Length: 98
Image (tube, rainbow, N blue to C red):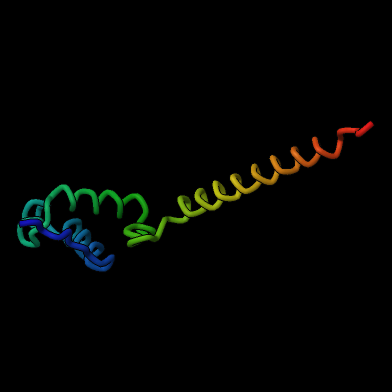
């Protein structure tokens, strides 16, 4: 039987990380109680400790740096296309018909 991937809200993840870091329970104990793999909890702790404000952005949401990088890549692609069109137009108009 195929099990569905479980999804957790940002609030749940933050509370779980606070439970682990704020108490003397180990990651293994919390993982057993919540029936979550310990590696998942370690990943949550790492993400939250790196950037608490932007941790766990959710489905389809990117952190601001990744979002900006994506926008800049799209803009770069558009500008390259415009440049290529202008190069072709310049080549066409610069030929002197004699």
